Image 1 (cartoon, rainbow, N blue to C red):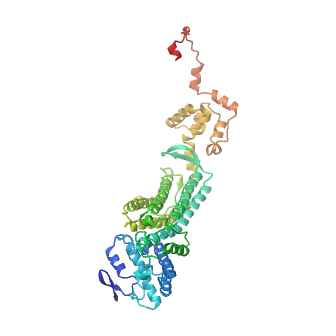
Image 2 (cartoon, rainbow, N blue to C red; image 1 turned 90 degrees about the horizontal axis):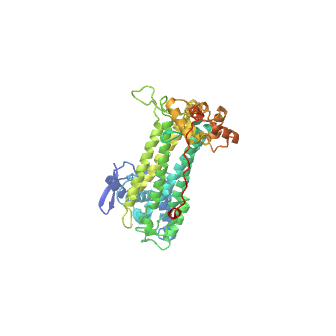
Length: 510
């Protein structure tokens, strides 16, 4: 393999001659082989790094700190990266020591060598354009890297949200499709009161829609950046006015409403916006997992479970049990959610581990946030296309559950009273009779009244059906047969003579 020799403070090292990265990138690649996931796995981060470097180059040019020739070459190199070129040159593992210095230098070296070729020089001829002196001018890893992270996470969110919105729309479509199917709602895995299958799917859609808004709010917090603060937020090695100007240029390049942090020292050490964003992803993951649990329960069976819906069969489910088909898509979503929830804990611990003026654990934070967004995007697309869109309803099973449920007695409580309803429910449970049959048998309500009160119009929303006063009076005076027979018996008892009332004492009055 042909090589070129490069030099840093630790000495000389041979770098592959065709590589656009340099000596510091190569050292980092040899030092860190932890996840096996290189920076190139997250193109949004590379795009964001390139935008930061381009904004810095133009600002340095405006302040006469960089020649137009060099600035133009750097910007052209950055544009190549923004367009997706040379991403394979970002070879450093995303988890690394040094608070992201290796990632920053990987970007500096790649941009420098692309720019050198555009200027007509060979890779590694840094005397004509240097990774540190030119590409990294007026910057530190400690402001360039977290600013790129803020941008990269927003770009990743932009890619993810459409998938979440599409999943929400599919659930809304199923809600409309199933709007006419009455089923039993359940609380604590026990029969509760009737609802429609459509209402169940509409609720799934609404809860996911809420988090689309929350992600937007979290992205707004990431628009406050510390670029221009350099090492610890004091702005050392920058010119007066640099911070304001470079953020303005970056906002224009990225089309994001970026603003300088009000206190760059605080912003350099604080990870609060990342923690908040991570919390939103955890909240969403919990909702997606809960929904997946519900889908698995509702489709359980097919003959000995709830069996109210059918999930589309994706693959044979067992190597030993013929005909078995498992809910593999919701299961995969569950596992994705568990990983996102675990990643939130990793972000929390990394954010807490910051010391004094810097958090050296930023690579862990950035890796977990970008990885969670990537996983959620793929999982939401999978769930929509391979599960939700193909769900069908077992209408007969839903109707049978309602007909034989004890829970429908709740709809009759205002008309027969809680005590009568409790007794009827208990009898139905132990005899196998239906609530409807027992209420009619005991003359608590007429069949016509029961049918009216147990109709979907009455049970599925605040009731607009009221018995007339005459019907209520008639129902209230009717009682079970045994109770009626007992009341027919005349029982006479000897009345006690009324005792003389004593005058209230002073103590009684008090």
